[in-house]
Structures are given as C-alpha cells and as structure tokens.
Amino acid sequence: MKKIGILALALFMQHISAQNNRFVYQVTMKPDAENKTDIKTENAYLDISGEKSLFYSENRYKRDSTLQKAFQGGGGRGSINREQMEAFRTQINYSIEKDKSSQKMTFKDRIGRDIYVYEEDRPLNWKMSSETTKIGEYKVQKATTDFAGRKWTAWFTTDLPYQDGPYKFGGLPGLIVKVEDDKGEYSFDLMKNYKIGELVTLNQFGNTVKVKRADYVKQQEKYRKDPASFMQSGGGGGFPGPPRSSGGGGNQNPADMRKRMEERAKEEAKRNSNPIELQ
Figure: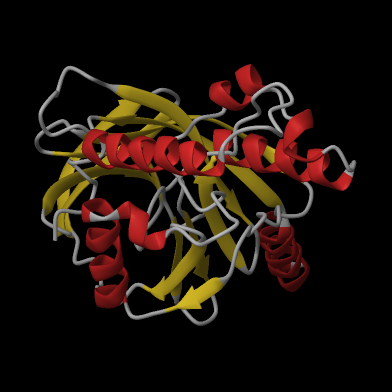
C-alpha cells in the first residue's frame, strides 16, 4: 500500500508538471531617464510547460497576431486598423525563453529589421533572507540579487512548484510573485494564473541574427544613436512597433515615410533612455 501511495504521488506530481500554465504579471516601468513621472504599465505572460518557459508581452502577442491575420488575409498594411495598432503598443518587444533541461536562457529582441538572439551568460546569485510575508493568497519569502546594474528584491512562493519568474529571473525554490529594483523604476507583480493549451509560437518578422550578448548591446547602442543606418531600401518595417495604416495611403512619398519613421525611431529611443539593464 505504501508503494502504491508513493507511485500515486509521483504520478500526480508528474501530471502537475506536465500541465501548461500562464502567469500574468503586471509590469511597471519608468523608461524615460529624463521624465520619471512617465510611468508605463502593461501585462506580460510567463507561460510554463514541462520543458520550458516563455516570457513576452500581452500587447506584443496581440499586435503580432493581428498583423499576421491581416497579411494572411491578403489585405496587407492597408487593412490594418490604426487605432487598434496604437492600443497594442508595447514597451516589451523582447521575449525570453528558458529551457529546463539545458538550463539555457535565450533572449530575443528586434533591432531595426532583424531579430537579435543571444544566450544569457550571467548567472543570478541570490541572497536568501528568512523574512516572509503574504502577497495575495501566497506566503512569500524574500531574496535579493544584483543583476545588470540594478539591485533587485524578489518575493517567491513555494506554494507553486516552479523555480521560475518574470523576465530573466528564476532559480529560487519557488515561483517569483513579485520582483522590483531598489529605485522603484521596474517591477513585476503576479496578478493571476490559469491553465493553457500549447505554448504559443511568437511571430518573428524579419531575419534572425544570433550574436553574443556584448554584440547585441553594441548594436542596440548604435541603433539609439543612428536608427537610419538600420533602414533598408524598400522597407520601413524594421522600426519598433507595427506598421501603420494611412487609410489607403499607397500614394505616400517614400522619402517622407522614411523621414517620419526615422523621427519616430529617435523619439522612441529617447523615451527608452532608462532601460531595465544598465550594464
């Protein structure tokens, strides 16, 4: 009977770990270094399966799905609703995949027309605290770490059987319910969770370029200083955010479109002068 009980427990835990779950985090950001009163808030998903997890923006997923349907339907950019696209604007254009078996973390982000991919090479060194409290329905424990130029405090719960968390955070004895930096400029707060089917496959418009993290940082800095250098003839789709519909504007001057997109890219670079990673 004892062996049967142990076997049943093992099968139950295997069933739990095999389920796919979505954890919805509210992400609060102050991305403009010159205007800390400009606070951005949006939702992001942490989808967890038995093999991996995927962290990405809710708006990015909705935006890309809308674009995909428009192009598959043959309507192209002219069929895209401008107001709807504006509603899907996101500060979180990146996605992060964590592979449980290899323990590798892959970061993907768009720069210009291309998707840059690198493997995170910095381990998280947590300092555990005995301090506990309650956040929502979960009993949580405190842990701190220094990462990418910021000091972070995380609160994790062992009530959920996942050693994971939002963004690049994870590796604690339970799921991270809340994590924020000491300046109050970035925070991730668990809002809800529910079961899902298969993990989504995010659309990857453009070429995929695999690089070292240091090379990604260099390209990102180059883009901030000179976004026009990332533009390619006949394109325009390489800039952050979705292509905009002009209400049938097939007669737009390409030079004017290029100029507007360049100005928009520079404005966005300025508004994102306080990134989550400072180093």
